Length: 138
Image 1: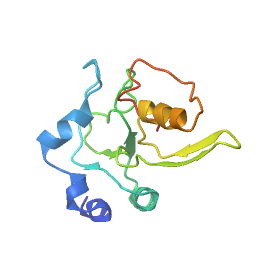
Image 2: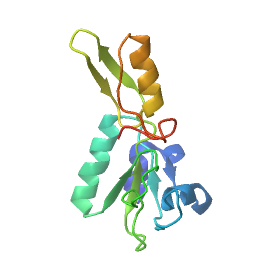
Image 3: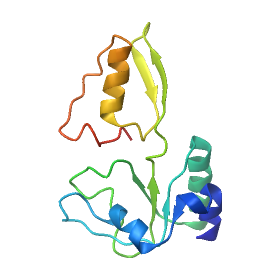
Image 4: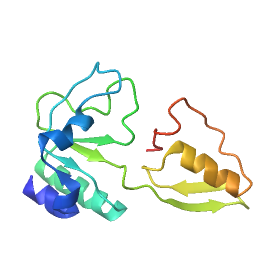
């Protein structure tokens, strides 16, 4: 686990169970999991390094963005062997191309933030969800 933590640094490698707890349950409380490590990378390069190490070591990774899903897919299993990969720090809108009507965003961008950025560019991002103020794209 130390090799994984070294990729993001101690500040973004959560090990304390109080810090980890919100990542282990879905919103309705129907799905509960366990892990000893939550990683919060700040760049695509860090995600790549984490995934490379996970492949090398056979360590299962559970990606998680806003943790607003209601089917439990974002929650690790109860074995404690999986690492949660929180994508919430990857929250940049990289480009809004008004000529081609495309947008490039990172996985942790909140849907409402994207809608507001599109509106500021005189465009519409047409997806609307009840959790749009907290759900993330990724």
